[in-house]
Length: 91
Image (cartoon, rainbow, N blue to C red; front, side):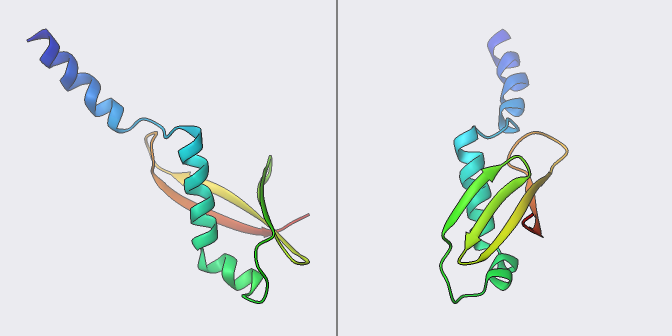
């Protein structure tokens, strides 16, 4: 009985655990690359040359264009909540 109560308390909390860093980063990159706004800003004439993580956000380079993408997590709890992307011209 004690084990059952322990599982009922722990399992729901584990379901809302934060993603490991590798998977969180992979998810952010996928969301950025799949974004229609990034496609609009960069155009389809050139490939993405690099995506690099910096303090201010992700730096996406394509040819002579450079864009900063800031990732915002919109979730009241830790875990794989909704991601909102903010695109800015790179400094």
